[in-house]
Amino acid sequence: MTFDARTIRRQFPVFAGRPGGLPLHYLDNAAMAQMPRPVIEALVAHDSLSRANVHRGLHPLAERADRAYDAARTTIARHLHVADPTEIVFTSGATASVNLLAQAFGAGLGPDDEIVVSRLDHHSNLVPWLLLAKNRGVRLRFLPVTADGRLDVGKAPDIIGPRCRLVAVTHASNVTGAVTAVAPLVAAARAVGAKVLLDGAQMLPHGSVDLPKLGVDFYCFSGHKVFAPTGIGVLWGRRELLSALPPPMGGGGMIAGFDGDEPVFLDTPQRFEAGTPPVTQAIGLAAALTWLDEFDHHDIAAHERRLTEDLLDGLASFPGVTIVGPRDMERRLPVVSFTVAGAHPHDICQILGGRGVALRGGALCAQPLMNDLDLPGVVRASLALYNDEADVAALLSGLTHAIKVLA
Image (cartoon, rainbow, N blue to C red; front, side, top):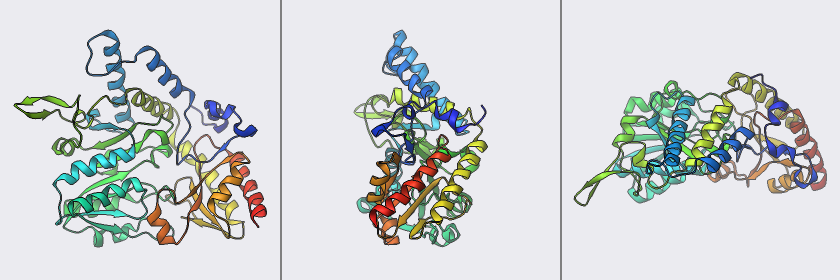
């Protein structure tokens, strides 16, 4: 499909509305992306015509739901270039994915083991490991962050030592937009026999993710950031690793049988999907990725790069505005955070929100990073493929107004 942001924008019903009576300039995509009409239609169609629990019933409606749900897993695997769909575990989101792995992988760890994390990460990929350290005595080691908001992967061989069992870091920062150089981390982890988890929540909406090429062991993301509904996420893992992990939750749908009073668990993915799974949400996620695959990922990246360059240049022209993150376009996403001297991020966001510009302000669920930067928070603008030059212009114009109001 030919890439045209305004044509794409018309596929999103939300932009036909006028929240607060104003055109919507939606620049809060790192928190939640909007859903296109094909995804909404897929959700409505399933719940209208195929709503049934899966892998339980033998009636025609249940069998139809089974086929749709299983096909969704295959579609998502294909999008990630994964050959085996059983490596795709459905969760409620990236947070649940990391917690699942922390409980399952961490069950066999103790005081002699280390996990490498970073203060650049979202709380969802830091707090579960902090809890594991508290509960099991595992030692956490932190990869340093560079002055421009990147993981300092050059220090990886010094941090990832022989006791390291897992490296759990972000694929791309939700604060600075910096994309992690994965290869050095994988090499350092492999040298000591450690595994690697990447949090891909920010990365997936902006380009093709080829998991075999990345060479990592686990990967997670959320549907609501990639044009899909809330309540759905994915944990991908190499099959031999997932099959060796104990299930952190028990319930229906994950039991092969009982040996006396001892449950016998199904293999992946069912062993990690206790209870009724998010059937409709999984179908919505598959629809979103199918829709996204209609576009050339290089076209998406080029479009977002142009807008990000315009935004960075525009922000740099304001006295008192400081960009938090890389100033150049080398390995960065269209996620731009900044501060305004003498102004609280919430005030900036509220004033611009009153002009139809949707931003995010605060610590962005990255409090350790804010503490290191000695900041109360930042203003974040995050773009997606449906944004255009008018959105950037509205932000810059609104910022001029906000600075005058707060002066």
